[in-house]
Amino acid sequence: MARTAINQLETQIEAIRREAYAAGYAAAMQAVRELASKPAAAPGAAAARPQRRQAPARRGRVARAARPAAAAAAAAAQPAQPRQRRGRGAAAAKAAAPRAAGRPARAGRAARAGGQRPQRGTNARFVEEVLQANAPRALRPAEIRTAIQRDKGVAMAFTSIRHALGQLEARKAVEQIADSKTWRYSGGAPASS
Image (cartoon, rainbow, N blue to C red; front, side, top):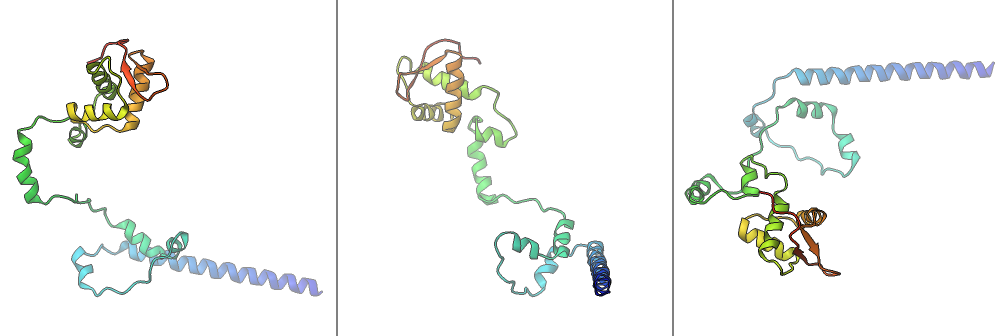
């Protein structure tokens, strides 16, 4: 008899808990729908309102979980603003334009900024040309990098130089000197242009 009363009480508690959860969920979803249906405020309107002091953000998942769902929905509903480049002002950029107009386009970063991408195998070709020009002298990767920067105007990463040396070594175009970190041109495959 006592057991059935406890079971009935647990069943009633579970039903009440489910109803309360459903009601809270429905209210939260209604608040999200109302917020999403409102038009986005003008950027100047937010600046006109006095700013409330916010509590410092917490680290980790707590700060993200503590953020109200309505604020997250509002942030997602606003269109993304294009990021403005930092750096030179408009006057400095205009002043630099005549100087840049007289120079030929440089490979590397300047060319990639314009949407062009270096051709496949360019790094290996640059490394091979530098080693060929200095043959039979062996060069370290730092010397190769300096020569490419000076001659071609390209700042190449050491990992890119090492990868290019590996490719050229497989083609028997360059060889590493014994146990040193120097490389020299061996004349295996001609430089592709």
